[in-house]
Image (cartoon, rainbow, N blue to C red):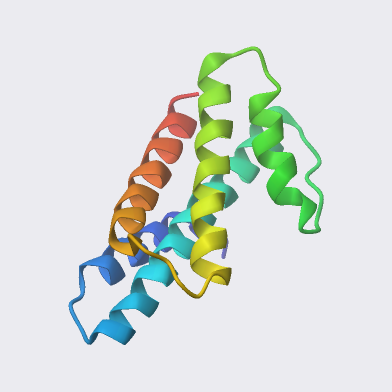
Length: 125
């Protein structure tokens, strides 16, 4: 069975809405950003592979490759996906690697919104 990457976004939304202790809530918000990114990234990667015939690297370079391929096209809709994906990856890197993350709640909301916009755009092209 093929994994449905939208389930990452669904779980991210659920985690973002659960109220718990502050330390646990911070962990949930960080994971929410992480999941929102991977939902959008994997769907963008699949779009390039399945619809545009790209061969995606199987290393960490895949992240840069995917966003760059959207940015390198002359089409403004594709460029929009690339820009949003790069921005979402910056949020994900902060959530995954930076110990002090002021404005985490705002970045969580922004991450979910960006992921939804990316996915919606991918569904329309």
